[in-house]
Image 1 (tube, rainbow, N blue to C red):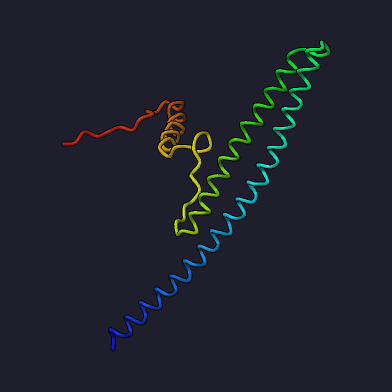
Image 2 (tube, rainbow, N blue to C red):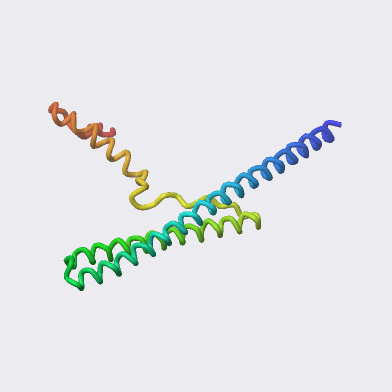
Amino acid sequence: MAAADYLESVQELDRQRRELMKRYAADYRADLAEEVGAREARVALLAAKAASAAAIAERSRNISDGGYRSRDYHDDAKIRAAEADAELAAERLALGKARRRQAESYTGLFRAPPMATGRNRRPRSRAPACNWIRRARPRRRRGRRSTPRVKPSA
């Protein structure tokens, strides 16, 4: 009798867990659909921006070749066009990754977007060192030792 009750409670917990997983999967897929839609709109916007920057660069070349403006004006327009192309390429890459995560979610693989890297992420190992240095500065100004004394072991 106790074993049957235990089995029933375990099966009920398993059913609840499956329902919860299905809800989480639906939420994850909905979030990915929103992300993909937003990234597609941003790619379209950046494509128009890159096309406009390229057109401005071409017009500025004609103006600078005619002697109406200096070459710096054309160089600046080329730089803006190159920046727009790079931004568009980065956004297309992010869109491709989001689409892959979306396709994988329908096969049962649920991955989170990658963590921030580079300038946007501070390494964890640096924080304690910075805090130790910050705490040591006032001690040094007051004439105290900046490093803790270590007692010799007997």
